[in-house]
Length: 181
Image (cartoon, rainbow, N blue to C red; front, side, top):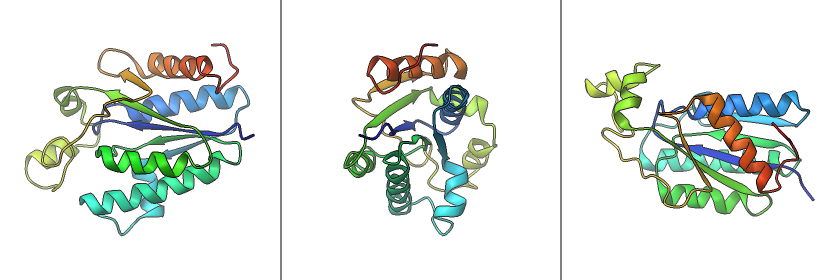
């Protein structure tokens, strides 16, 4: 039986998905687990360089990511996927692809739009508010929060480190890890 699984972090841009995933991945790597990080910006460059940000482009890209994540996980890798993935139906499709072989854990990284705009580490909200970016999630394109994620992490009020440890402890409780932190 595979020991790999996919942890899919979803939330608004700048909500802290990648920070939490990187922190959790580092903790697990330090303890000898095989871990891969698939991050939205990085993966888009090599997996879907032609993709824009229309609903269909996003769907096609995330379906590709789901297949890559599933292949890694069924080879005993823990895969952290950090993607805005704004649409419920597309996340449902991603789940169905992954769960053919391995567990899928949907993590909602909850952060208010106001706080994400305040953070704006890449200046994307600023550009979108000026009209320089079309189809920007949370502003001119919707973000549909998951109605029933396996776990919700509050990144507005808690640090990435706190949330990473909370996630790892949850994975332990569910029997996906054997790790005490």
